[in-house]
Length: 195
Ligand SMILES: CC(C)(COP(=O)(O)OP(=O)(O)OC[C@H]1O[C@@H](n2cnc3c(N)ncnc32)[C@H](O)[C@@H]1OP(=O)(O)O)[C@@H](O)C(=O)NCCC(=O)NCCS
Image 1 (cartoon, protein in one colour):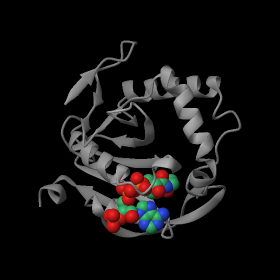
Image 2 (tube, rainbow, N blue to C red):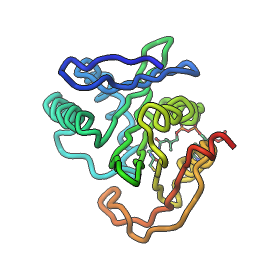
Image 3 (cartoon, rainbow, N blue to C red):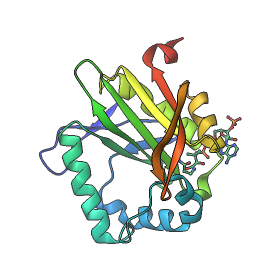
């Protein structure tokens, strides 16, 4: 497990790698790749994501995003990762662990996306396989949660392949693409990975 330091006084961040992928926290130098991939994948991603702020793909919007990320990491609230191909350095997508709860809960929720040119190549399945052990290991989580719209068959498949178990259906759970939508709730315990 590699560790690297953010430029600030933030704690060491996770940078797991494996299966030809490297996952690490976003940096300002990622802006061009990130904004180009998100823009070229807009129609593919937006049906499954919260509405994008109007300045989302601008440099200042990205800087604001990074400031929020740095605060959230320092507060142990959320951990964003971008996914890169190790051989070319190409950005292919992202996974964010959010809503980290400590104390007697020790849980967090993942959200994820893959750029359209890289879809259906096994990359999100591989990226989760690389990341999940770190969430249970270095981040000491007991449980990782995810939610997905029932018609998002790719996402259902990714979660179930990664070992998540479906725990229920939450009605009008998240506002996705401007609409309160029902979501399957999934949970993953460390034991499921070891079974
Ligand atoms: C969902 C998403 C992350 C999947 O990423 P991916 O890298 O394409 O997934 P993988 O290539 O690892 O696919 C895993 C499995 O799902 C299947 N799959 C992926 N997308 C699919 C689709 N649109 N329709 C049917 N099956 C699909 C793959 O064929 C593969 O099946 P297999 O295990 O039988 O081989 C990606 O499609 C995406 O970013 N979608 C838009 C944003 C989104 O939905 N985010 C998640 C919100 S909950």
